[in-house]
Length: 226
Image 1: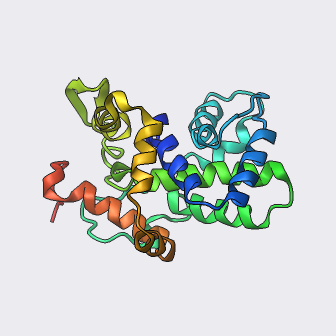
Image 2: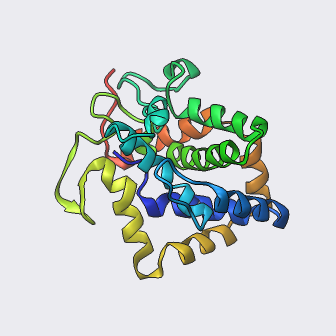
Image 3: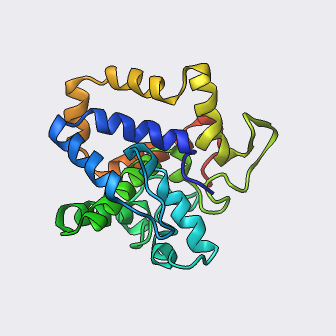
């Protein structure tokens, strides 16, 4: 399943872009314009590049020529654990989860020497950070983060619980406003103190926050097995 719907990822990356200074924004725009997918397609906006990893995942699964280099990233969209888990730890990742993706592409963004590899790392990093903040991307392994939990009657066309969080809730909240205006409104609400606190935090903390949201009683996902 996709990690967030496309609009969710675009919102996350539009906000991130707006929090940067002009020089970094210009560099991201330059890199985005130079990147080409294995199929030869390009991107006009960074926000579209942040959606690309879901496309890459599906094309790699479909064994389309040239896309197999994205095979290792298949499980990097989430971290799922047993229902007896109360506190996430690095060991739950086992080197193959969204925390792996964040660490790997953060490093590549810093160290890569070509525009292609830097841009690819930038797109994937933006995507992973969106993923780790979707609560059902840090949840239970036995129902695949809600993918195996159907939603009776659907919710904004979501067929399962995971889809409700990926796209359904976003569609309901955005309404006619559109994702760009919604993202801009959220960005204006961020205080300098919040921004500083987030920069000082760590990916495992982000995953734990999502897990707490997914498992708290008010979410009505399900209870821990004791």
